[in-house]
Length: 380
Ligand code: NDP
Ligand code: MG
Image (tube, rainbow, N blue to C red; front, side, top):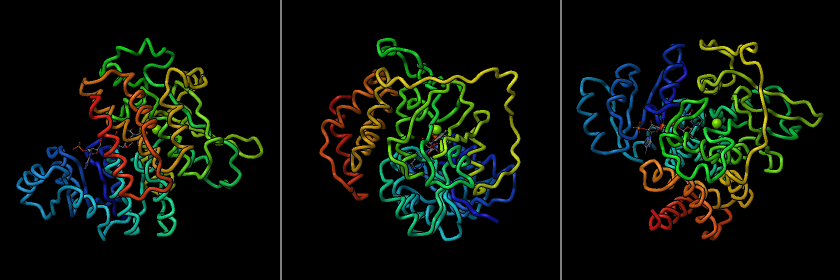
């Protein structure tokens, strides 16, 4: 029986991963981790009986340990707990479904311990891809993308020669503000930005979709996962979110993956290492759908996408600054402290103020993150 660890089990990706485990009944969960939602974590521990549960917040971990006294489960806390869960001996695969750069160290620990990775936590690859990809290769560890676009690319590459890719066509819905000018987005509130037209996801990524920063992160994620340079990664706006991404090959042929917007397919495809298993759920009906439309992305009103290409091309520590500034700004926006447009303004400002390190270590990446937060702290 396959054994998995889920980091971020109480979130959008984490809970959908557990839905798949519940449905197929042939995967064993050996560890679960979350930040603070111990009510859900307790219920998950009782249902899936992992060996270990990890809670980021120390006080909450103590509280959960009390609640789970009757179970044979170890309760851990903080980064130490995440690292222990990520590298636990019994596991075969780690699902990285935490949000943000907090995932870097646990992902590296999992790879070093020889675990395959089902990677949802894109911020980790964006900021530390230059360390993670060679490490995974050296350890003989596979990285299975969970992000729907990257899974679509991965599915389109099955049986193909990746060396014959001519372009990756990364599709984007355009988010809730597609077609608006910056001026028309000036006063949008978190509740407006949290209304994604097609996908139901965690709060941070939903805001990233509204700014198009998510697509920028995905461009950088694709660069690491598929080893193509930025000139060959193109964003195509496809508002219906039916085509999840496409690959064009040297002969001009394009292979795409289509389906309803449901993260369970890419999660399952990663968990089962490219095996096509049953998955109940809505199916595409082309008669009802009628049409699929395409647009070019609006780099002017959505500068987050242009800044992401700039950060990705610069490389080194610049993607870390891009990502850290975004994480900072999104949390301030969600707290009502800054306006929507300030998110990408802050990213730009942080990138302008940064002196690049060409090949940052994990410590340097985390220092850059802290420096970026410090720079922006005075603003909001
Ligand atoms: P959510 O906000 O829904 O969930 C985040 C999860 O991470 C929660 O379980 C949360 O715990 C946990 N977490 C946060 N901080 C810590 C911490 N310091 N230590 C331990 N656990 C922590 O996010 P999503 O599921 O939407 O996204 C997860 C990742 O997947 C992101 O990187 C996102 O970009 C990516 N992704 C998500 C998609 C989606 O459809 N949701 C699609 C493609 C990619 P708690 O509940 O206690 O706060
Ligand atoms: Mg995506």
